[in-house]
Length: 213
Image (cartoon, rainbow, N blue to C red; front, top):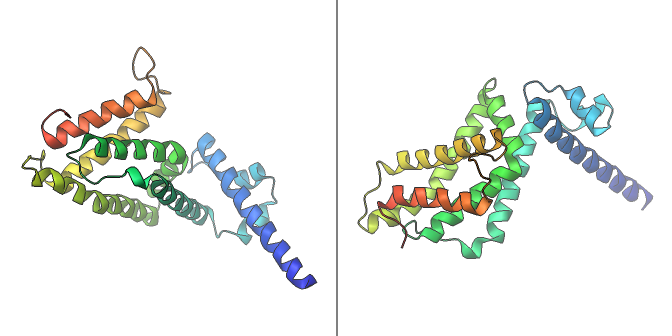
């Protein structure tokens, strides 16, 4: 029994250290950027011995990969939590707005990891491929949503795949600019809801060629 308790204690301690390293990495990546961060920066921020890092991760890249896995799992849980209001019909303004709001929330919660992945992709083919996988998975999910538009007899701006790339690029670029300006894109501050509504109407018009009813 004592051996089992000891093993359980070691497992809990290891999980605690791993979580501390991930939390510390998020803070250091936000402050210095992924490429400028050293492993010793992360362990110092976590209050752990430098050597303890390698009990959990082979290197900084593996740590970021684990953070990406956590991010996607949390994103799936968040979608399931609000899944009862989800609709795939992009002829419905509420469906478009739901997806914009979901992206807004996802980006807000995961901006540091997303930016770190982009920076890692500059020097790592693995992370470059991972980013492509994320985009492709999102496209695969959304392509059926645009099918409702064409079935309704409305003309998309162009090829559905290209239209989705434009949507993803617009949302991503908008969020990057939003954070770069600390949310001050206009003379007067605007609420999250106002921004989400505006972006949703913009996309709805682009998809459907008309204003939402």
